[in-house]
Length: 294
Image (cartoon, rainbow, N blue to C red; front, side, top):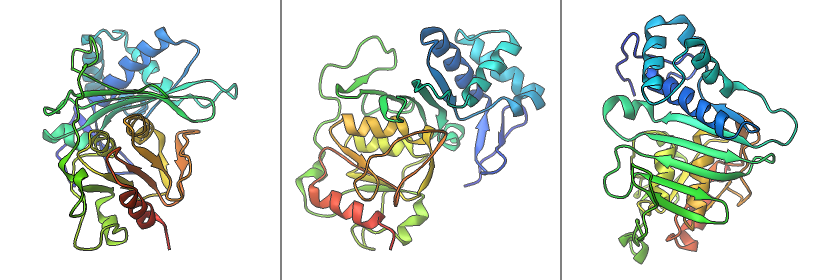
């Protein structure tokens, strides 16, 4: 899981050994500013903070340049403040909150593989209302999916001018039954404990991060995904969960309970289990059962 880092471009984040790049900061600063202008009453939550930028002049300069290149605030102090706006705690007023992971799967971004830019809107009770995932490396289907609670999921091309009219993700071959369907798990090592279809049917491997796995389930490339951890971060899951649900699938904890995002972190029983709209009830039962801690 090692990946190269370059001074002034990226570094390994203290505490969780994951990479973060100037692009992570640039995207967070830019989206924070745009949301602040468009929805001034809403709170904003982002994965990153500007502490490391303040300590690294080269990284700070590159992040600011990238953000301003796409319309962000060119003033350094304003840019740093926009990144740090993602740390604002709940106000206690039941306000809505935009939840951003500027790059989920930074390792994939750095190595030319999959990564996702993910944004969700949650209400005062922590329920996801809107979710958008963009996968720049996607080639088989339109690279952007957007979900609105109660209104389904739409697909968008990179230009974002209008949704794609036709069915972007057709019925997959695995939906006709037969052998165990393709499925996903995170972390990958959890397959030693979580085996919904037995030891002879391991999960597929998809790099990188949790969001790309939600994307695969919503698109029908996998029957389901088990996030086999109970303590999780909201920005890794909020937008993916609603995209799966509004694509016609299901998402819950291992007991079938609701998953909510009340703060920067949240807890679920057993893990998050999501299933494609094409997954049978038996497949869902097996995934839920495998995620149950014994």
